[in-house]
Length: 164
Image (cartoon, rainbow, N blue to C red; front, top):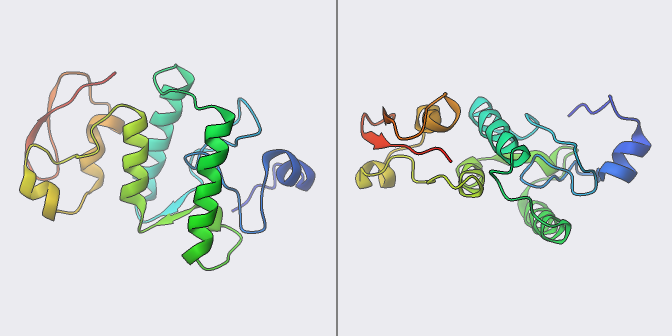
């Protein structure tokens, strides 16, 4: 990942880059620097969906529709992510932003923070249990869907959506 728009001292000492990358709260917000955020720096299978969810999460954080966590809470979650990532992801300079096959869990975290239902295929329980998620399942969040409208997800199931 290229963060060359920061000098090394700022990136390492102020923002908090480690040897294995940058660990951010929810992959977006550095714990030590208020009013700074990064969207589009996580590595996962479906990057465009991740970036859309990150942008929506950040917009809601900035408008008060996502609860801002305390520094202590953010620090604890970042430390837990470091421990988890370092326990199984091979060492790389971008390990801190690697999501890869855990993207559904990551999306669920963002959705829960936003007060959205992470079960994107409901009320079709069989689709929820056995069908893979696709970018279309997140259309009501990042595709310009409005509150209280009926939309069709990737399994052609009509779902009611609500926006906060």
